[in-house]
Image (cartoon, rainbow, N blue to C red):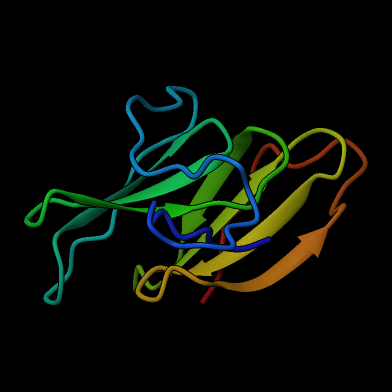
Length: 122
């Protein structure tokens, strides 16, 4: 699981199609404010993908790797880390670094029925 780059000119991409922009969001999963002194950004989910949207640059960074639609998210108090989880076959929790957009830790099959709620403690 990890970030799939969306450069259409890149060769050797593991997928036949590559996601470059996301329209819409999952209304049942809350949006998170990632704004701090270094950036103006929000995080939200659309189906299987987490999106960090830079409000100033009007750009998206796509966090991909879930096999099922993301059902729950949370952020660390300093907004550096984002946790995403899903429900279904091959469910997982992924902890992302919101600055590098890379996965820091992946927990496979965290619960037999997937995850519906979680939080990060300091």
